[in-house]
Image (cartoon, rainbow, N blue to C red; front, side, top):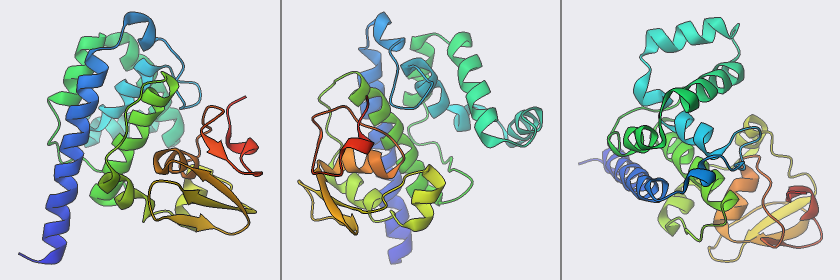
Length: 213
């Protein structure tokens, strides 16, 4: 078996594990937690979880139709669908959509299975960090995703790291140039994906602009 094939199988196994672990967490959420604001701007927990399963539930023709309705804006399309699905489906439905599709081969338009893993991990953190849950993403998944951070990905996610260097406390990883900002690898991953994190999760003089107010 070639190295590329082995890598694909490995990443797909990590994706399935991530989805199952998140489904376990989501299943135990209290009703009020589903209505808590996530780290994903403008979305509650229920919109985030609804969005996570969009690619499993929508065929390509339906996706293209929704994109047409949104006048070609992927952001408008995903926002509209997440809000509609959060109303249409119960929390139990939303959990089942994640668990039942643990091995679904969906990938985002670019980036393949690594991007699919990033989609699950980061949106999972959008929920668990916002709710103050103590879940730690396995280091292997974080390493896979942190290795993809570059100028192109930062621009795509709207992450401005000008003048700072991100330094992980728990993994051998750093990125950028300038004033050091320290934190757990999963919190720095959130920063690299354009999120702001709660106070107390980062250290360093340049941390303020990456913190929730």
